[in-house]
Length: 520
View 1 (cartoon, rainbow, N blue to C red):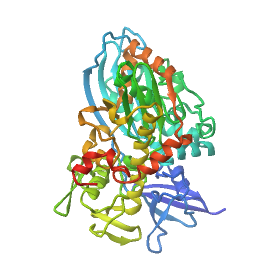
View 2: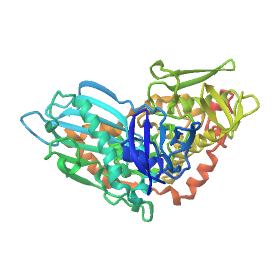
View 3: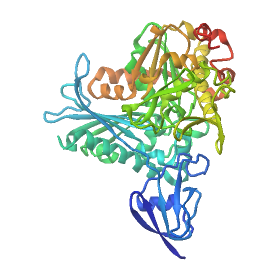
View 4: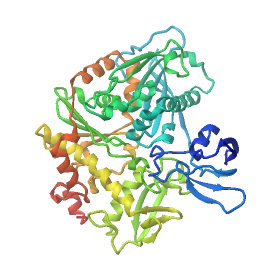
């Protein structure tokens, strides 16, 4: 069989590939990353590359669908994989420091939140409860699938070990950035891992695909291994403990959120909404705890949206329409490169508020739209656009999250508008404009003082689990008494979901503030 030289740019790496091999597979052989958010099915269009056969004009093709038949140059669009790092040296508030592992010498602990999109890490001094160093970066598993279902399929097709290697590479890079030669990885004697159920399985090298079928149970609900077994750049004898997962779609990140918020110790009923790919919701107090997941999708994390991106330099993070003109800000005032979650929420709110979309999220004649290969779209700036399909995706995403919260409340006979405390968790939750989120029907329309932002409580819970025995005891207790509600078989959820696919909702009475503001 003939072979061809394939040169990948801008990396400058060349590989000799068999005739007929897919560009995406040749890239893997060359050690070059090409995103395959749909798992290589040719559905998402996000693996578009420019190919030149060194004779003719360059052409744009899908890497996961295009075979190599001659010597070619393949140019991959720049997708920044920036890592954010910080040095905190902040003391965590606990009554008594009781580390997971004790040592007289350097005794560091590593807290991890393995998200579908982003991984966050913190290094703590377990002897005195100091939060020393933090870093966050992209979960490289996104190269093989943008959501948990796609990655489950990839794992089932034989990709479990590859997905494990991708996440371990991502984490070990963060460890290196955190330590920055200030101390040896051997000084990390304990690791506490939080994350959704699929991410924890893949971190452990366990195929999560059986969770897709009934009874939708995790292969492992709890796990502890050694540093050597984990593959992490830590002490080989380190204790590596995973936050327990109650179900296939409600994982250790929600267990961590619940305990970090302290809603498990409160008298009054509280609601917790984790705004992420899985859209998990919890409702409870010291006497009961019920949880669910709505599979919201990655739209608010930049996935499945034409110009969507993670919250990085150049991402449009806020948006408004002023006198018919589109005004926006970007992270760190960088050159506009795309739109992140907070910007997308603002966008939907402003388009509706100004009459550029109707209640269904469809563009109106008032919007300065264009028509092209992507259908009807609105040009924000340069190549950054929002299509009609993008708006539909965002409508479905916000509907799934809101409907999950309403269904959970109704299943226990509670009125969501009577709940005195609503916690918003998730990596970008703190950056969401609350008024805009309510105006599009993402969050319930209740007094604003009822809301509290937790930030990344999944990571926060992992930190406290490293240094507090009482926190670890509460984790074990909450895990045992959580009840999982399967929304896929809940007719109440289906009804709520259909009703929530409008702006802000088909029932205007649920969003009185939107009506008062003349938006309904």
